Amino acid sequence: MIPQKLKTNATIYKVLGWIYIIVGVLVGIGLIVGGVLTGDSEAMVGMIIGAVVGGILGIIFGLLYLAIGKGIHNRKEWAKTVGFIFAILMLLSIPIGTILGIILLLGFSDEQSKAWFSGAENMDPHNYQPPQY
Image 1 (spheres, rainbow, N blue to C red):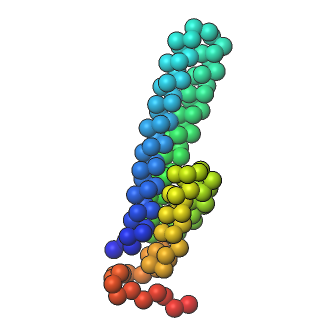
Image 2: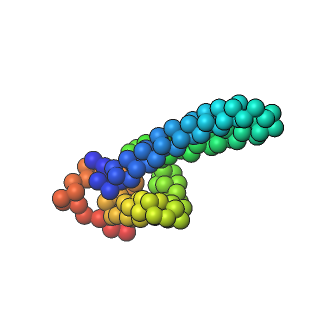
């Protein structure tokens, strides 16, 4: 069974993923509508380009966050590595990102979490012994 701290990490990444996707789509739609409503052809082109770029980036980051959340559940080492890097970057987003980054980093550095990614089977959190290296 997945350790609770990693379950929390996966949930955070999944929620952030959906937020990025939703915001990316809404920003895209908003900029397109705003560009059309300006009536200025140059402003319209700029806003449409911004909408496409912003929307695509939001969706890409959202899908990446969703993949990290799923990868954590599936014990993928790349999910731990990429998730750890993103958690470090989140520390710069004061205050909410900093709090989430700390929670994520603590989750990844827990002994049970390390054992999870090393493939330890049948982990009983009440009778857990860390691996001996």
